[in-house]
Length: 197
Image (cartoon, rainbow, N blue to C red):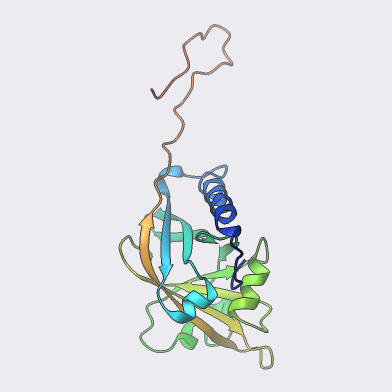
């Protein structure tokens, strides 16, 4: 899980679960597969390594309008969380001003409480009931900063909990999409099934 030390047996289990999560997320029903990508990042600073030891892997979609993050998983471990798009106004008064002047992070996602989301919120923003991740540009071969923002439990105002820095590790190769098959609704259509090889 996020921010916890893993046992010697966990890396193999974690890799299998991580791969399963990524494949399931990348090929969820209704997915525009050609637009889905999976990038892995290594934790680049001591603070980031403390929060996500082995780095993070992101599943996202590239569209004409930009990038949309669909989920994240701890690379080589068993932590996984879902995020949903949000706006700076959802964070509270001042929005992204908590990041400070000159920040390049602007894409806001709320961490859901599903899967390990509640543990991730506690790890990144202790005391906060809700937390958001604010992403910088997600591009191949470029480092990434992700800011965790929560609400101060006493004042209710937004606060920057931690800035996480990652170095680009690589892109997962996705399997090709299934070939279209002949319709079997027509009893006279006896065309053979399409096969890739």
